[in-house]
Amino acid sequence: MDKNQLGIQAMQAGKYEEAAAYFSEAIAENPTEPVHYINFGNLLAGLNEFEKGLRFYEKAIEIDENAATAYYGAGNIYFNQEQFDEARKMYLEALKKGLDESDLYFMIGLSHQNLNQGKLALPYLQRAVELNEEDVEARFQYGLALAGLEMIDEAVEQFQAVIRKDEEHADAYYNLGVAYVFHDKPDLAKEMFESALKYDPGHMLAGHALKLMNSEG
Image: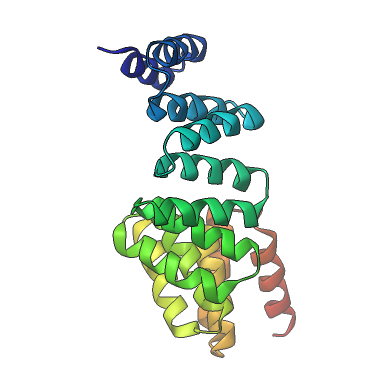
């Protein structure tokens, strides 16, 4: 097994110093292989060593400008530092370079959402769900994007699908409750807010909404 594979195994086992040593050796043996730099970048990013991780991704891109996963890794670092516009640019480069995965579309959508660009987020979140129908969080964020654009019926379908996959998803119940208020269905709305509080007793928004509805009779 080569040093790169040994490094990945060590990283997965939580042996980070050992992983770093293997990746360093892999780079020393083959300094023009971008994958070694990408894996070292992944290790550093996972340890919140963002600036160092970014340098390794940049080195991978310098060696191979089509190294799509290096752009994706750099995007994740920018996203985790709440530099959402920089993250979006990196993710779009990864897409342009051929990366075609649900997680990438999800992160592009989230970046747009954090930039208050709901219309731009929508197709990426939709694509993320199409590529991985089991991804509950992608579906929930897709529902939020739909709701934000006042596509309430479509949002309700997504939130209901989230609950079918994860019956304890308090935020999905809360947002269903909001949708039912919008549709003037107070009994259903109360039921959803109560369900949100059942699974998350500290859900402040659901608690406030339920209190407001009860005070109105």
